[in-house]
Length: 165
Image (cartoon, rainbow, N blue to C red; front, side, top):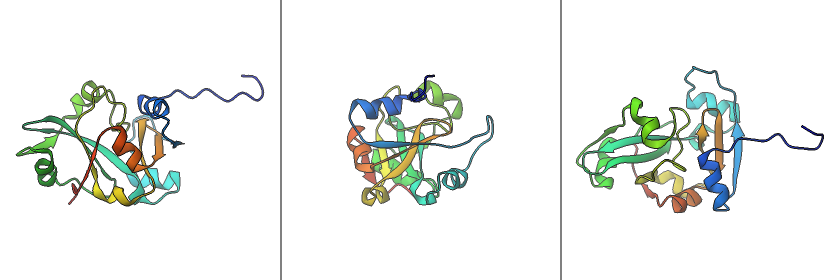
């Protein structure tokens, strides 16, 4: 690399999608151990941001609709009954971990609601509706993106809804 050149960063599907749509975001990398599971508390600590601004992406399966994406604060738990009701299902359950990559194109710890193989119905916890920004996985472990929730909502046609306990 020549002096003055920036190191080339490999873009994820999520970041490429944001770039294509001219959506502002900030990449935030953090250290991970290859096979260790990091908690949201660890991520928040490394990024120096409040835990309630770190959102996680969960993929569930509805008995009528198939895969559904839930984006919730990492310090909260999804309410399966609320999610089922808002998505038009009688019940929903987590997608089996073995099926995550083949369904979404992402792995555990690096799943983003943006840039999946297919766009599934997506519900963002309504608390995000009042935020100026939140952090989401940027599509790989060790990389988050700071982005406006309304930009995400419009980009992927998500619905803000009460989906946590």
